[in-house]
Length: 336
Image (cartoon, rainbow, N blue to C red; front, side, top):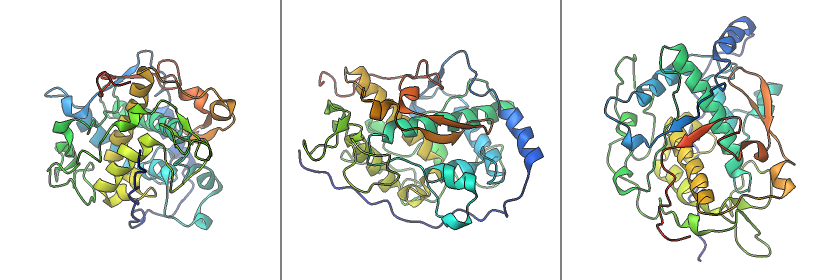
């Protein structure tokens, strides 16, 4: 198969200005107490297709309200919108960061076989924080992050809630709408090449570039690697990179991508496709170098420092975050 050309993620302006970092220990602890227990669910969350939510479903309304609430928190709060986005990447000068921020920020894994497990952990913690915020605001206790299945022909546009100028019940601009190069006009913009699922035909998770010349489904056997710029795994290359690039704006740069609320629905779909691939009879790596040799640092919903290895997150039914997807059908039909 011919090599696919990666569309570069373009650089955009840094984060909106926040106030100086100050010691807010008492206020932060109160917030952490309110958010603690977010992951203590006995029933798995159900992540649903955003384009197939029932009429009257308020998943996105609560998502918008939670984002607005998180945006009011200081960046020093590990549950704040800007802190969570900075875990993926930041344009701030490393010399200006605290020791905690240097450890936690700009950690996203790309062009490595750690791409999928790292983002699964990142997504799980973010979902915990949003769900706890939703509950704090009076919403349902079983809120789950929806996914955007843009490979379906009728889902090639941004979900309408992400393009509206205002959101009922919230002051100012709709928090789901941000700067983007494409999509905010509500028109379909993703073509077949951008959302191709040929990656699902790859049988091997970790590719060996030197011996096989293949980056595999989940990424080349190397890393950890914060920002590799070539030889991504097939799923990371298409549709992951292509969707980031086509949306552009904040999504066009790994250092700002997680500031766009659609980022999280995009990555929920990438995580879902990993489960689809596994359900097709494919296997995750069994090499200890992948399973347990590397651990990644995060803060959980209560602000507690935690680490995860890939072996901790591969099982969505029994792992730290218990969740299911409403659709894991093979989109390629009989192709395996």
